[in-house]
Image 1 (cartoon, rainbow, N blue to C red):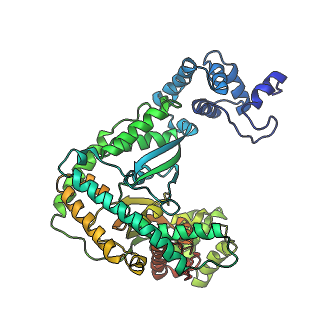
Image 2: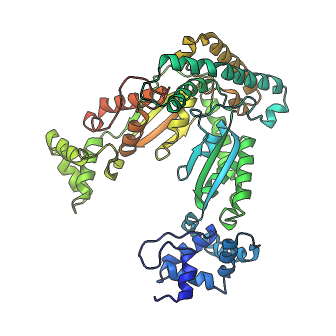
Image 3: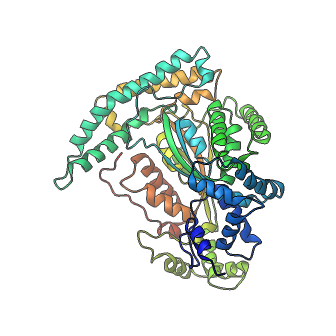
Length: 504
């Protein structure tokens, strides 16, 4: 299509070029982007041509909406109704939910608990950046106070416990900073500012163990409307009021820019009722049972045909044969022949490369017992399937040796014991709310089912010497487990077992 000069001027406001096959679309309301992309499945026109139709549209009045958005000051509610009508028909009426994935919102979430942050981030298809316990020092008194606790007989002990944890955190921080300077002197060629930043990170990584799950944090989140609808539904169906409040607040704010696409995100009876029934059922099934001692990482399930299936998947990509025929051939191959296929497939990876997708066809399941602070980092690997248990004191706590080294070992233990007592006290009547008082030092269980490709990513990243020693150990143990059952596959996973100072 040949564009007029007027067309080109209109398009320049919203596309990155006029004549190439690939271009960025920008400066449009999210709902308009979703409408524009929805046309591609049925319209033979280009995105530029459809965009012009929207700008000049009389039936949908998108032009008014786009123009008002450009000026960023006009009331364009009437025009937005036209976009809503489109989505009511196609997304809600006909169930074309994929359209909603083209409407994206970036949301600032402030002053929510660390406990809540893990619920928010338990959604695979979104992007998050959270306030770091490594690079920031948290202020006293900045913790969440659940209404159910504050209106109960536990209000005083809850506040006293959280205040005491923050007091100890504040007391330990300068001492830990000084200790890190003594333990890791500044290299002559390192700038002072960089050295102080690293020293602060090392201290924060240790002292963070004291912070309770109620500690307030901030999150930046970007997600499409389809993911947001699912997230809001989960939050509104959660047993804790903080999650309900967050879900409602996210819904109200997102409705201002993509109203139709989250309109029907409500509390879900299926989620609520199933969770209630299953919790009571399992409680009865395991009553009087205590957690048995276990290792931090246990490989509880894996693909026994992993090596054969990996080789078969690789061959499958480069042939035109059916998978079963290839697998039969692979099973007849010698170990040397199989190793050659795997070696040729992965040996050219540089340190910046990741394996290709054929490694996703095999899986491993790990039962992981790790301190809550390190879990927060491991949870970021959202491509794997995670099943998380509630935060508890049942598995004890970790104490970094540095607290002993600065003479605060006994004080740390007293803080943990005090938090433990408060947890038990609150749990008797408010079991879900009791989680807020648990410090990050206490261990938590999580079940990870992860494919081999993602395992390459997790182990390489989390074993890095720049990482926290707690999750470095988990990465090492995960690799150890793989090597026990599949040494041929495990040896190609890049892992850093080097000693020397990590930031933890």
